[in-house]
Amino acid sequence: MTPFDDQGFQFASPAMQVERAVAELRFGRPVILGEGARRIAVLALDSAAPSVYDQFAAAVEGKHSLLLTSHRAARLLPGTYGDISVPLDGVSFAEASRLAYGLQAHAPARWRAADPLMGASAELARLALLLPAMVCADLNGFEHRFAACCMLDRSLLATAVAGRQKFDIVVRTRVPLRDLGDAEFVVFRGGLAQKDQVAIVVGQPDLGAPVPIRIHSSCITGDLCGSLKCDCGDQLRNGLAALKEAGGGVLLYLDQEGRGTGIGAKMRAYGYQHLGLDTIDADAELGYGSDHRRYEAAIAMLRLLGIADVVIFTNNPAKMAALADGGIAVDSRVAITGEVTAENARYLRTKKARAGHMLDIEALLAAE
Ligand SMILES: Nc1nc2c(ncn2[C@@H]2O[C@H](COP(=O)(O)OP(=O)(O)OP(=O)(O)O)[C@@H](O)[C@H]2O)c(=O)[nH]1
Ligand SMILES: [Zn+2]
Image (cartoon, protein in one colour):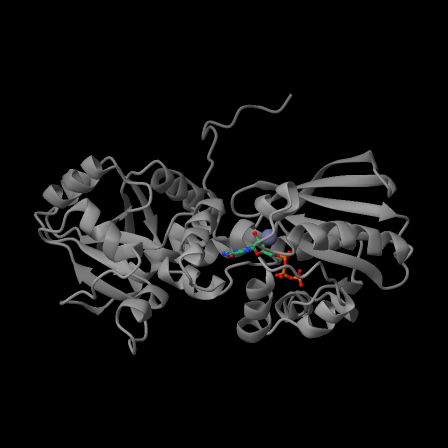
């Protein structure tokens, strides 16, 4: 029997501390961000109750401000670059929310460039799958009012990145699939949030040769419900069939809804798309860049499966670059397409024109 260590259970790693802060934000509570001797309190507008916003404003005696990312700032104030900070003294929760992510909101009269510590709060919000619109306040003299809040040193955000690459296999099991025969579902757990990620192995891929793979980002609307607004459902099913036809392959189904922004943000973005914005501008209104996905999980999963050399089924050059950066050799690429419909044509054209996807939409239309 192992003798009990008097230190007890010491559970603290940068990734765990980041995740604790993320959980606090998701519950709508303030978190303290530190750097050197400086401390700021941050609160996510997306999850905070109006009463907590008011309590926060009172605790810092009106010296709070709103961090807006460079993407949102450029929508409100064309020509600005970088994150900005807007004073919130006397600004209500509803007004702050409108300023943070409302369509056709008035440009703020007063603002200044945000400092990097405030900027780091937006990174925390993105990890929490909350809109990157953060109420921030320096804690000079107000520390005691935030004594119960979780504290995170900014340096841990960078250190925690190492945790993104750490995954283990939890279980591998056979699942019979319609039209595709037996597949093996391999469940992995790890990364910053210890999420479960799934690889689907169809056929019997030869691991001695470049392995056909697809990296597929989750799309509840398209994959599950056949939404006509995107091509994801077609790409998922065509992808699995193409991997099987290629003699067997692996589809990595990554938990990255809405290009890494989460289903809440994606549905808000759809609301803006219904009003005429394209997919990238809609995301920018919410404070997001064109793509927030990361591929450390995919690289770790391939490694654990013993795959170092791949044929990738994609039109997205960012996926190929991410694999190469992660040390996976990309032997070649196979295009993977779905049906072009009246509803998804603009989405596909935007992917090609603004995200550099390798799509020949006119050829696809001609072939239909
Ligand atoms: N933010 C946002 N995300 C969207 C929208 N439509 C689809 N998505 C997401 O976009 C991602 C599409 O991922 P993938 O199927 O891997 O496709 P891809 O990046 O186009 O690359 P390939 O299909 O491999 O060529 C998924 O995370 C979807 O949830 C949208 O309008 N806004
Ligand atoms: Zn989709």
